[in-house]
Length: 88
Image (cartoon, rainbow, N blue to C red; front, side, top):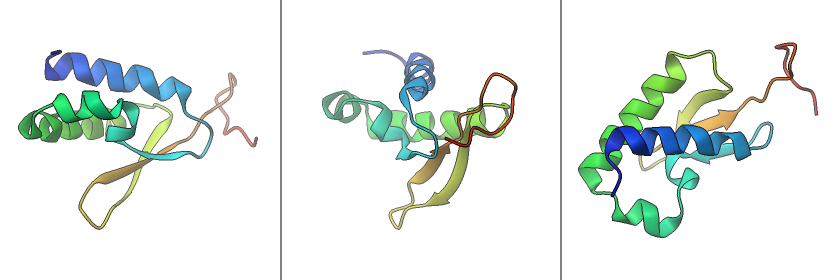
């Protein structure tokens, strides 16, 4: 089982498969059985690390509201090569 830092890298790499404007949860970046194999404490830490990554980088992911169960939602904001928002 990968450690939390390796899981963070996997999650970040999976974001390249997202479409413009797609809303997702961190768990959506993993296969169901993979997510279920991660301990609750590691999932919480992974969520904190992913949110920190999103908030501290000029990436293409934005944190939006939380679900009623307290899970952080994210939106993919894919930008074109010039750095402007893609209007597709």
